[in-house]
Structures are given as structure tokens and as C-alpha cells.
Amino acid sequence: SAGGKTAVVSTINGDSNVPFYKELGNAGLKAKDVPVVAFSVGEEELRGVDTKPLVGHLAAWNYFMSIKNPTNDAFIKKWSDYAKAKGIAGHKDKPLTNDPMEATYIGIHMWKQAVEKAKSTDVDKVIAAMAGQTFTAPSGITSKMDEKNHHLHKSVFIGEIKADGQFNVVWKTPGPVKAKPWSPFIEGNDKKPDEPVKK
Image 1 (cartoon, rainbow, N blue to C red):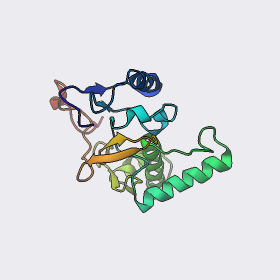
Image 2 (spheres, helix red, strand yellow):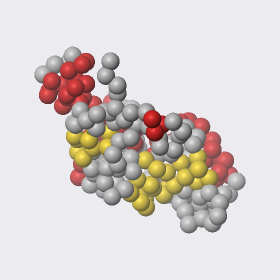
Image 3 (tube, helix red, strand yellow):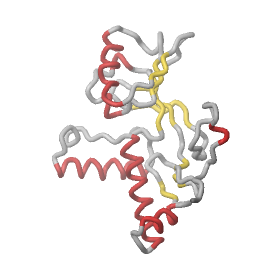
């Protein structure tokens, strides 16, 4: 991904990534010539693509399956065992985890903790109990729900595509990034509050 003066920032989302990366490979465009930085291509999207021509292209996520730590090892094993036991198509033979799965895993556990704290499933009580929840995430950090805006504080990773369809993390934030619900780069957002307005 050393590249030169040209790069592609891909904002393609979902299934459209597969034909894009197939055509990128067919065109012979390599990361050393024109690196692609994507925000929506991960392990699952690369499953159906010959990744060898894509080695070195980049993706930014809050989690990659290839991150090494005991919490992630346990997360991958739980999913792998479940996928094999249930015969889940595509996963029973080659189980993969990815960022949306990790985000869901964190969310479900934080919801459970909030229900236990609230001693209720009443929506308003659970919402109040969600504030400040923490959970040791498979990404290797303790993810925190912001007390005011209920967005998660999470780390950011940039990974290079490897020939096996996994990612080699080449950069990461020093720790979790404080949640900001509004982009400071969009005009007018500086006037929006970071927390919900009480009615």
C-alpha cells in the first residue's frame, strides 16, 4: 500500500464491494500502483473474491478477525463452534468474524448488563442504565458507551488485505476514540448538541 500520488477512497457499501474488487483485480490494479482505502469491505465481502491481486489494499474498521488477543480468540471459537453445530452456510466450513458481528456482540452484552443494572426490561430504565456501560471487546479494548449520547467509544484500525482474505493491522489509534455523533467536517454540525435534547 505504499502507493504514489494517486489513491482511491472507496465509499462503496455492502454487496457492491464484491464486483468492484473483482474488477479491480481483473484490471491488474495493484496496491503499489493505486491503493484503495475502503470503509465497508471486510472479511465477509472478501470471501467471494480472489484476494491475491488485492494484497495491500486497505480497509478501516473498529475490528478485524486477525487481531490477536485472548478475548478475540474466545469470540472466534464461540462463533466457529456455533456455526459448525448449526451448519450455517458459508460459515460451517470457513467461519469468519467481522466488524458488524463484533459490534452486535458488544451491543447485546451491554444491553444485558443494562437490564441487570436496571432490574427491568422497561425501555426507559434500560436506556438510562446503558449510559457508561463498558465491555471488554474482541478488538482488545474496553469499549464504553458514552454517558450522554450513547455512542460507543471504540478504537480504529487500518488493515491491509492479505492473500488469505484476512487483514494485517498496519495502524491503530492509541486507544478508544471518544464518540462524536456529528462530523465536524459538515457545515452546521458545530451547532448540534452531542447529547439528546430533553423533551
